[in-house]
Length: 57
Image 1 (cartoon, helix red, strand yellow):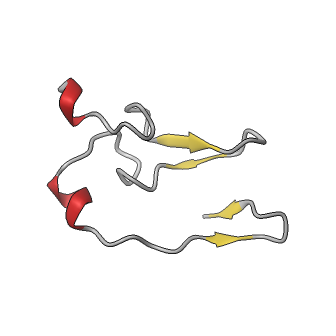
Image 2 (image 1 turned 90 degrees about the horizontal axis):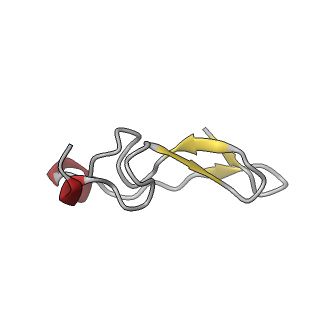
Image 3 (image 1 turned 60 degrees about the vertical axis):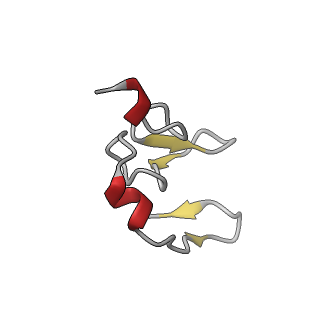
């Protein structure tokens, strides 16, 4: 994977974690770790949260 195409949000892992350590797919690259033209053209999606503001997948 080329360094310039690596997703900078998840550093190429495809996973993000919150401050409590809960992990979820990267919402920037879609979980594949690569930032490409498909990710740029995809619209943002609103994520659901529970009563403690934890993301629900």
